[in-house]
Image (tube, rainbow, N blue to C red; front, side, top):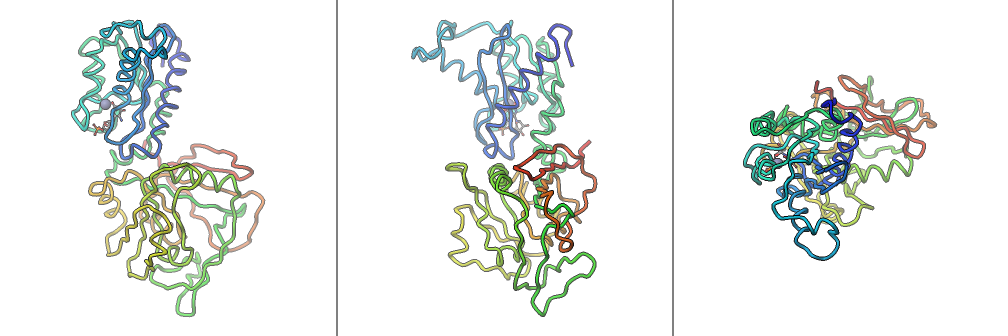
Length: 379
Ligand code: AOF
Ligand code: ZN
């Protein structure tokens, strides 16, 4: 999309910078969206901002606050910025922002008002905000006040970055990421080895949730690079959910390692029958909170409750196969990461779920593993 004055690639160049800045909020702003903003005059950046922490300043406010701090600091770092007047005229500037500026009083006052106060001449927006309190209103306010607004630069990328926020706003529940490793012939593992009281469903070899298991047979499918990447993924979610069998048998840490001193994700154990072992050792495996969810709440209700009452924007479902299958059956999987080892063949075991109603977004290489990213098609 071009406004006829600047070529489209120039708008896209600055919008890409907004997206890169927005990502600094990864794991820190949920259930708010990640947003980045850049103020440009004659092809030169004056200031940058991003939504850095939940409850904190929005990207646009951070940008203008940063500008003021540098103007007033007198520490020499601002260079020519120091010469700037406090009430500088921004009418010849373009403000790029990856999400529509807000028009509501939330935890912070509306960004659209701030942009008007600063007298910015032109605003380029990545995508309209799906939040009904804001959608179209931010842009409307700006246009009504005579600001030239262009909407839809890198629109798909700007929406995809915040796919979980879209799920929150459009479906009104916590978004769900599923992740698994699979072999070249599509198996997630050799299967669960039940004790003598349990039954194995002959069709798909997935054990019913009520059945106690004594042992899981584990094979390491994905490689080291995939392992490291999983910690990046974990660092971006609010909670990690596992079934009670996985909790008891695998004794998973469910923490983020290798990313410095981060807030550890909440651990959620789906334990309908109260069979989980919550010893002190188990609780202390991570400093993340431990929530045990029992009862008969169906998964959609559970996710609505986690969003509206607990404020969780996005959770990662890490297994086991039966929990994954139940999220799948309830149509509650919104993003999938498959780590596929193209060289390993098992010839049998637990089949990975079949992809339905999902759009393939990316295919990356993770040290030899193929990393497929699928997303729910939200239209
Ligand atoms: C923006 N810029 O950087 C972000 C926006 O509770 P609050 O005040 O933080 O508002 C949250 C809502 O504001 C959120 O649901 C979304 O609609 C919008 N987020 N808007 O102009 C930003 N993060
Ligand atoms: Zn705002």
